[in-house]
Length: 275
Ligand SMILES: Cc1ncc(C[n+]2csc(CCOP(=O)(O)OP(=O)(O)O)c2C)c(N)n1
Ligand code: SF4
Ligand SMILES: [Mg+2]
Image (cartoon, rainbow, N blue to C red; front, side, top):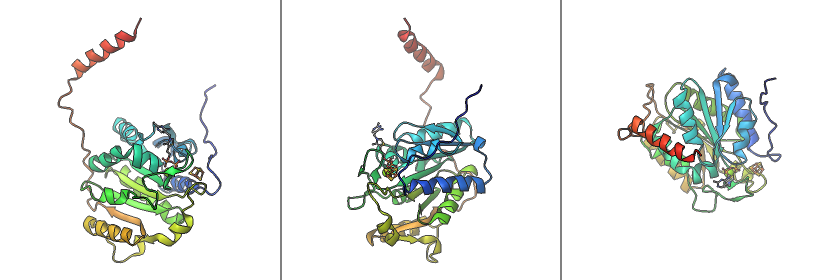
């Protein structure tokens, strides 16, 4: 008999924002008519990372902080696959931050969903780099500062229709080969850092703001930075590269790698492990 893995039930606390992210992701895949067999959902380590157990797509639980390089490798091996990386703010903005910066710069056509709750939920609520009241990091501003960036959005689990639509827009962007689609989702941890009351007052929807032009990177940067100093959190489609051309994926330099020589070294090393 062939064993297959069925979707698991979520293990999150009642009221956790991550439930909303999961609903939005499965609805977005349905809206786009993408089958489970065409989809690989990879996740980092954290409460957020368990999302990949729950959807019945192909799944992979990457090492802590390493979901972006793992997803990039999967997409490079099979560009026809819809590759979605997901994880928390601890996973993506602390141990994994180096990978995020280079994904903005190199543009693999994958989607990256970051569930931001300001804490390390799984390990019981330590401060993450986005914890409010600390000198906190804004990954949206960071992405806007990198000129190759092609898609930056932020959603909030309280605004569920917009969350689903932005998730679908991000997946569509990556599927069309237009580069790295980054969606940060405000997804409160009701057990260790219940930010629902604060964020309900602080968020500001740029999708209904006539002044905001999501194709103007410089204006978007200024607006997001200004709002940050006013204690407001912008959500919506923050920036999308207006070009309809496919993105250019920037490979790391391989000019100094000689594959035959490396194969010999690899086999030498493996021989040393054999008795
Ligand atoms: C290499 C390594 N270092 C530390 C940990 C401990 N650890 C597990 S989850 C986690 C952070 C989780 O926070 P986040 O990514 O924000 O996810 P959340 O639980 O908040 O959804 C940490 C530090 C680990 N599993 N592996
Ligand atoms: S500890 Fe926080 S992040 Fe983890 S499942 Fe519970 S509410 Fe969600
Ligand atoms: Mg977190």
